Length: 112
Length: 111
Image (cartoon, rainbow over all chains, first blue to last red; front, side):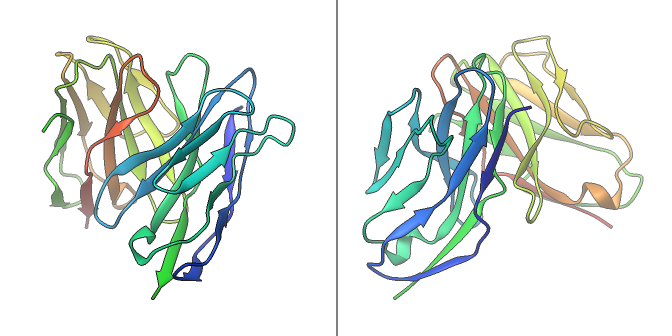
């Protein structure tokens, strides 16, 4: 079945450091891929998405490229801020968009 | 503001008690979902609905029931709460555009 695997956290970085959070997926067909962010005490918010191979999703300085050959959708940011501290979830949706499959989440702590 | 509203935000139940969690969306979305979030396990789908009057089982449906009598509402019921159902519950909805809109969650503790 479809599934998402992302790197375990927590990830602790200093402000202005480079961020990479790895995400790989297993899916039949042609899924769409997503990154969601969850701030403390809140629900998940869509951060970025990519709907086909080689697409790059970007938002708020975050980027991820849909790599079909490596079945990956790694999240990157060139310079993190303290306000980026949150839990990040990688997800995929099946072609019918009936279900989303989430990774287990990666907690990011950014220190001043 | 438009979006997904969950009530209540917090609840403590005794083992064996029942309760209903309400999810309401005002975006005219067809699809609605209930997830539970537990530490280290991400989000797991409990039940979902692809339209008014329809429901389907997700990954972890045991111990829960749902109803979608109106398009804008999706109710999650616990008939006899157990400590294993202590969790944070999230409702979400989506239309024809990709991506979910999530509610802010309900933190349930069963003692």
